[in-house]
Image 1: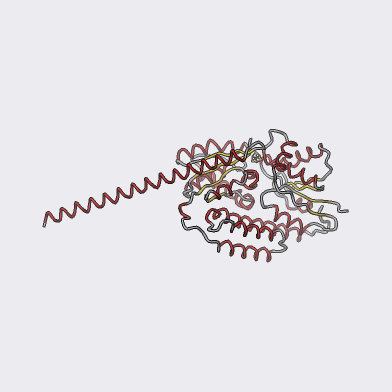
Image 2: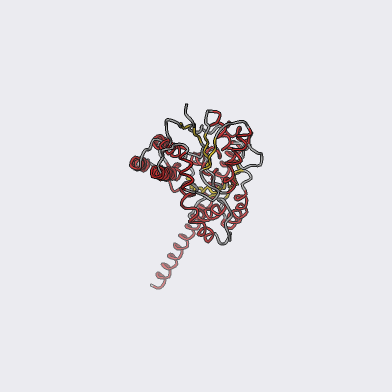
Length: 390
Ligand code: SF4
C-alpha cells in the first residue's frame, strides 16, 4: 500500500502545473497524487460547515477542498500559506480537521516569513527520499515557468474573449492547452506547447467592431480574482455580454511583480494613499487609477466578505470613482452569496456602461458637428467678405 496520497486546495487552473510538478517529484512506488475535485456548491457548503463563521471566504473554500480530498482517500495535504490571514490558514485548518477525526499530515509550503528554499526542499523530500536538490530546483523552475505560460495564455484569452468571431473558439484552445500542460515533462515541451498555443490564439478571427466594445477592469482580493468559481465565473459572464476584461492579479504577478512594484504603486497613487494598505489593497487603488488612465469604461472591485485590506481600499476607490467620473461596482462574495443576485448586478452595471458610452458618443458627435458648423459659417463669412471687396 502507498504510504502517502497527496492532495492540495484548488486555485483556478494553477492546479494543472502544480499537479504536473508533484507528479515529476514524487516517488511513485510509495506516493500517489489526488487531483483536487472540481469546485461545486458542495465544496463551499462543506467548507462553511466546518469553518468558523467569521473567517474569510478563501479559508472556507480551502476547507471544502481539503475535506473532499480527505474523504476521497488523501492523507498528505499541501497548503500554500502566504501573506495576510492566509499565512495562518494551515495551522488552523489542521487543528479543525484533526478535531473532526481525520488522520493526515498537513504541510505548509511557505514559511510565515515567505519562501525558504532549503525548508521547501526538505518538505518535498518527504514525498521522495531520493530527490536530489538539483532535480528539486529544476522541477520548481519548470513549475514556475509553466505558471508563467499559463498566465500569459489566460491573460490573452481574457483580453480578447469577447471579440472572437466564432463563439467557443478560445474555449477549445484553452482546454487543449490545459490538457497538455498537466503532462509537461521538461522545458522543451513547455516552450513547444506555448508556441503552438499562441499560434492558435493569434489565428482566432475577431468581430469587426472591436473598438466599440465596453472595457472593464477587475481589481480586488487575490483568491476571488484567481478562483473563478468563487465569483460565479464573473469574467466569463462579462465576456458573454461582450465585455473585454482586464485583471492584473495572477500568480506570476504575485510572485514576481507585486513586491517590486509596491513603492511605485504608492507613488503612482500618491494623491490617494501614503502607505501600503496590506494584502492587495494598494494594488486595488493603483490599478484602478491605471485602468482609468488607460481608458477603461468601468471598474469592478471584488472581495470576500470580511476582507479587511479590501474594505480599507473601498472608500479610496469611491473617491477616485467620483473624482474621475468612472462607474465602479463592489461585489462581495461569501458562502451565502447568490449567483442570481450577482448576475443581476453585473447586467445592470453593463447597461449603465453602455448608456454612458452612448451619451459620451452623442456629446462628442454634437461637439464635432458644432465645430464643423462653425468652420462652415466662418468660411461662408470669409467668402462673402471677399465677394464684397471685389
Ligand atoms: S486578503 Fe482578505 S480574504 Fe485574503 S486572507 Fe486577507 S483578509 Fe482573508
